[in-house]
Length: 333
Image (cartoon, rainbow, N blue to C red; front, top):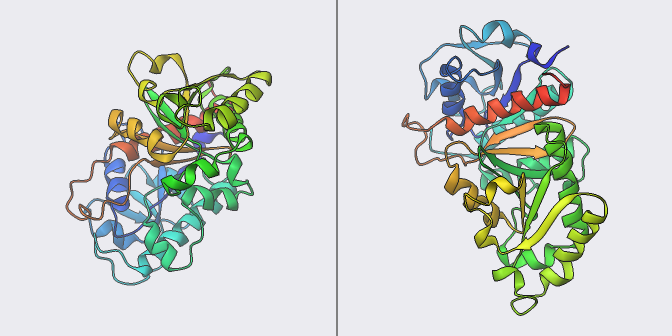
């Protein structure tokens, strides 16, 4: 079956966040944004609480193809308590996990062409026993992929970035870095750029950890001891990769066209430039998985949930990237 004959699966995330609103607004913009059909997976009441457009409950993902033209198709997760936009609770966290679990299963089974996940609140997930750093690691585990081989890439129209370390305290970053970790992330990034973006020979660039990329060891040894050896190993394997370079110079408009993805040493080193340049259109895409997974690059935004002011731009971009990546993997023209 061709990818275009299957819907995208959209896990709605925390029902008290903006996930239900941006999913509904994306459906409303389906024609002008040229969106592929998708089905929302979560509590229908969360959508009804923030949107008065047409919703239709479906029993199987395949029904979304016929339903999508007239209403937002929803695979309903049974009611799990009261829903108040902007007021998260543990019942909402359980609903978020249930919807994510179902969406991953549907996509892995081949009933959906790709997975798109809306934001969750990690603190509330942890309160119900969630043990993963984030949705990326949870999805990787469910797909049988080691966390080191699952790469979180943040992508916008003119910039793609990969944080080598993700959701850990800044003081732990130097100890978390290793030659093996950088090599694994770089390999997965290169493969993902080829599989999902049809970039046959990806050009990678690497940021240093320290100011001025360590200034030849004067400002830190991580570049000499870890980052440079990793780059040299990857170059010996044939990858087009260079660095490390001072992070403060990598994201200028004149430099961005010279590489396909920048590997950054920690979370904010990657996400600050991406969100500065592409705040309303940034997409989180997980590379290294047997399935395609994207997500809007923002959080639950509980402070604006239910106020009808959430911008669906990043959600629309996530849906578009998921659909495009599925065609790339299928070899479609």
